[in-house]
Length: 166
Image 1 (cartoon, one colour):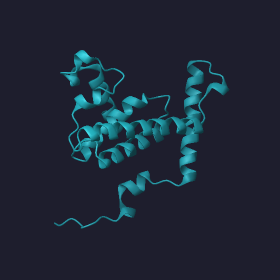
Image 2: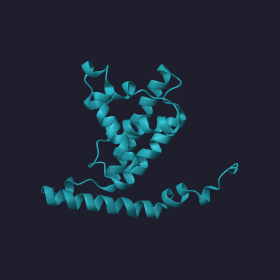
Image 3: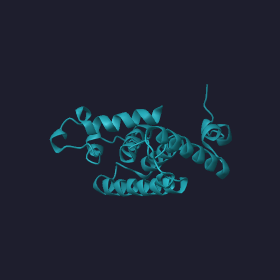
Image 4: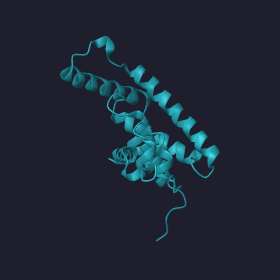
């Protein structure tokens, strides 16, 4: 059985599950922010003025996407076969999808980005060693550099990779 030369995008799962209008995105974001605010209000009394608005969340997302691009450029200049534009674009999509379901106050964005890059490397079949990513983790300790998969930083990257898949 032969596979079609090109798949029709309109019939793909990407189009069915991840293509939204501007109004749908705004509604999803408003709902997510409202639910997070309600959960936080139950846990701790937070004044309404201290809660993040959708626009605040979008600014934080933009900041971390910019930081991810900087990291990608830096690592790509050190080793051009890693952190290619294809991997970084895929990682950005993974992060955007995750942040449609989770608020920036519910996840550690730096760690989520690292997990997204690690997963994107696998998806795009471009090997990115865990040792390269863990040095960017807030959990990184120099003495654990030799066995990153056993370190707190390595576990954080791998845990976030798993979160992106769920």
